[in-house]
Image 1 (cartoon, rainbow, N blue to C red):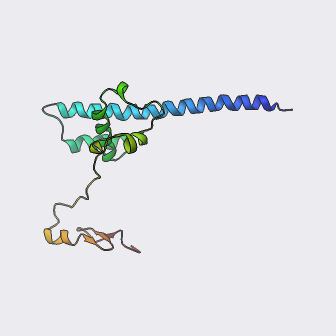
Image 2 (cartoon, helix red, strand yellow; image 1 turned 30 degrees about the vertical axis):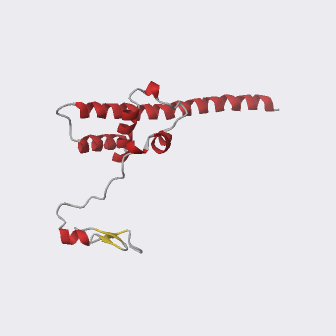
Image 3 (spheres, rainbow, N blue to C red; image 1 turned 90 degrees about the vertical axis):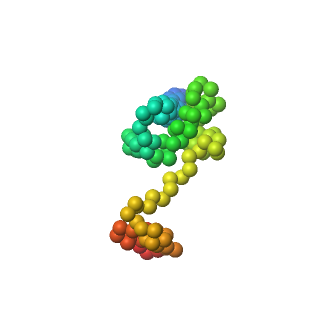
Length: 147
């Protein structure tokens, strides 16, 4: 016969490991973004630094995240250069930081819609239609109903 108390004790040990390691993983993710933000700030401090677009695109590509997320990392590192002075704790997630803790002034703005250089001013006026956005190269209408 299976002892219910033994099963419950085993479950408690499992939950302890799961919760501990989950918090450690979340905090490691926060530390990663902080370290990347600091590295980017160090790069920008160099007199002959790489262009901002190259830096953010490179980090976005390596992390498989958006350039906006990379800009959040820079804002995070700028706001709290010393992670020991960060008001959160190991239960703080990256989402908590980007959505709740960063001051509004430090949050990056959404990426603007990029208009291709070869689009003329006349075609630019036709880019946005009530049904969506029209590609100036091929004419495809993005976001249109039924398209």
